[in-house]
Length: 524
Image (cartoon, rainbow, N blue to C red):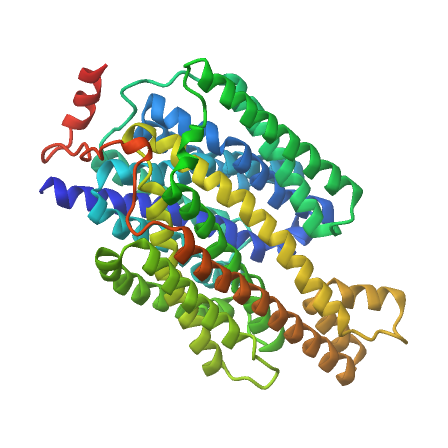
């Protein structure tokens, strides 16, 4: 087997790692109603099933990248995969809400290492011409989890107990561990970066508190005092972190985050645009599965099947985008992607109660094509600014910025959806309990209408939700239009390295790949 073949097989192992993290996120949302009954979980406990994962994930992203650079990306990726597998077993067999919350926090710790280290290896293994294709494989596999999660999770919840949705991680983890162990070479920074302990503590605290505030704002509104306080403190701590990193740099030491990365327009705008892709995609992921279930009347399994055109469009878009990027560069490729995203979203905003599934196939597939163009090319522009020496912490920084931006997106777009939904509700004559349930969401509203046998209430709830979905899709479409403008205005045509660093050849050794580790050892 040639080294070229082996590195693509190693990439498949990295893609499996991304898939298992994506599956865990999607299937949990399906299992929440069952968990509420089986574990007698309160609304607060259900919230912490999600938030314990998100907070640990946000806190550990930057340290994960630095530790990978220092101690070896393969070594820590294998450790993180094993940890994720053990935590999945703990989730599956939890008997208390506290036990499940703790296990979910450990899952977040594993994911915080898996995601950035899977991305960090790409600049090390692949040349500039191969890099976008490699990113497409890894990021595409993460996206596959969105339709596959509901399909697989819905089937498991129908036929087995709720713990089975966590057990599906285990065989995928086993395959990923074996593949990474056998196929991926070790890589680390030759300079062995010193652990910036103060930077780790301050950045972790800031990201945790800011993420918590954003989660609270999304659930309780932007006027919630606790949410505003947490966001303010988190932002202040992160500002202090930036000042500390500048001080470390001035002293000639190596900071946790290399702030000179932001001198690169490719890194800065690639990261911003990759985050905007996530924003725009939330319009679909937030609303369409619920639309299929509460308006179309299908179950979670059926909703997952109806999202498959997104993957078909993504694959087709990625194939074409790879060819265009080699000729026209990232600027044009990302701009075309955002244009397709905007087109799909704005077409989708014309959905009404009488729209058929064929219409959804059209605009969902167009959005998938936009994703295939925009996300890999934007990520490639950002990764192109990283030398192999700093790919771990640099990739972690990209993912941390996307994580915070994505959490902002969830909170903002959730507020847009709720406001538009509430604006079309007329609940006079209903009891306080029934009116409160209808305001909670369309699924609850449909259930109340069926309980009361009210066709008028059912029609109103459905009209209100479709209106809210259309408003959110318009907002996301406008975000995508802004992405077109920003890509054309600021993104460089070709990827760049900071401070003129020459791009190093990936440290791929001979057929056995053993030379990668020995070369690094010799360098030290």
